[in-house]
Image 1 (tube, rainbow, N blue to C red):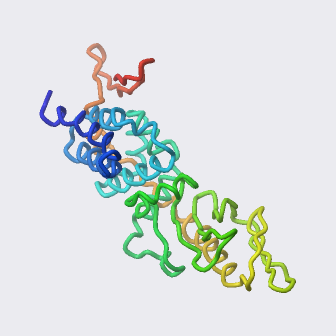
Image 2 (image 1 turned 180 degrees about the vertical axis):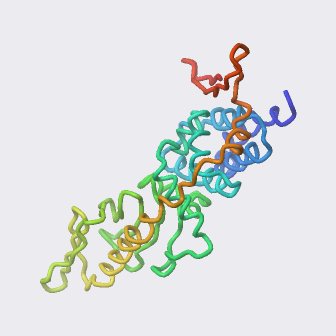
Length: 279
C-alpha cells in the first residue's frame, strides 16, 4: 500500500477515539475526505475513513454536522452538484452521509455557500448557516431537530415554558419549537388578547406570551419571505451542468475498462453481511 493509503485506517481510528480524548471527530473526517479528493488519491480512502470511523452510525445530529462540513469542503474544492451526486452513487457510505440523491437540498446549500460573502440573510438579524453550525459540537442539537437545516437563529427574548425559542430554516419551511411553517402556513396573532395573555398561532401550534408578540411575528414573517421569495427561488441556479473532464478525473480510480469491448464501467461499493465494503 502507498503511504497515504496506510494513513487512512489511522485517521479513521483517530476520529473513532476523538470523543474519548475531548476532540471533535467531524473536522478530522471532513479534512481527510477533502484531502483525498484534492490530491486525486484513490476514492477507496473515503470509504475507509468514513466506514471504519463508524460515521455511518453516528447520531443524527453529528451526522448532520459531518454532512455540512463535507459539503462545505467539497464546494471549496470546486465540486458541483452533479459531481457530488455521482460521487455519492459510487461511494455509498459518502452518499448516505451527504444525502447525494437529494439534489434539491444540495443546491440550496450550494447557493448559501456561494452567497457567503454577501450574506443577504444578515439583514434579518444574527443567524448561523449550516456550515457555521457544523463547526461547533453544539450545532449537533440543531441538526438533530432538523437534519436539513439551512440556517438557525435564536429568537432572543422569547421563551416557551421557560425554554428560549429558536428558528430553523429548511427547504421544508421554518421550524419553530417543533412547529413547521410552510410557504402558506399560518403565522398569525389573533386580534384580541385577554389581560397579559397574548396568543400566537405558528403552524399547527398555539403559543401564549405575557407581552405583545408583534415583534416576534414580524421576524417570523420576514424570515418566511426571505426563505421562499429570495433563497429557494434561486436554488435551481446552483445546479450547474456536469463538468465531464473533472468528473472523469475524480472517478478515475473507480472506472473499469472492459478488456473485450473497451467500454467504461463505474465500480460501486457494496456492503457484505459482516459490514465490510468492497468494490
